[in-house]
Image 1 (tube, helix red, strand yellow):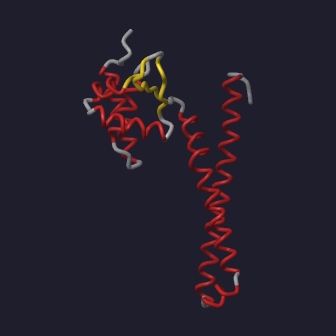
Image 2 (image 1 turned 45 degrees about the horizontal axis):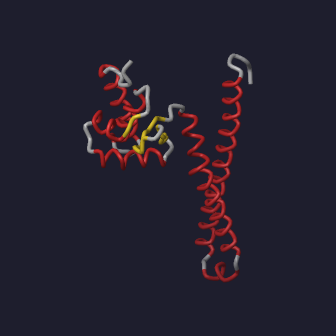
Image 3 (image 1 turned 90 degrees about the horizontal axis):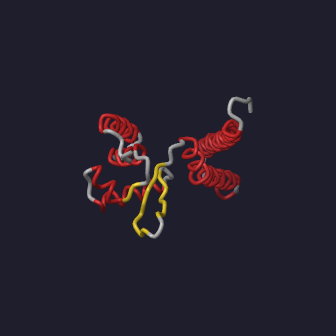
Length: 178
């Protein structure tokens, strides 16, 4: 069996993935290259991807590094072959969980730190003396909005963690209630 999906199946899928990328401001070529990997039964080399996508190998290399960084693809060794081989991460929940762990949780932690620092600064006498009441109250209101956003972000992470546990239980015991 060929590792390439028939063009009648692959082209519409690649176009759909490219449109999703455009929604997020990601170049459509990223989605098209991901789709080539998704439709392949085997990992693909940069040369294979470049040929299938009609793109320069250097362009494909840059895109694959970015897709790998964002956890949409994995690099896989193939025996003694020194070339880079790639495969897609096909589980959207795995991508989301990686994003939460690598990007969202650290951002929320920094946001919490930022809010605490802002609130401490607004309590300091020298800052209080430098601001009129209206400016001080405005900054306090803004700090409260940020604090709520951080709290909601923490709730979001907790919800995803609980969902991850339920997904793992379902995978281990299909058809049973978690």
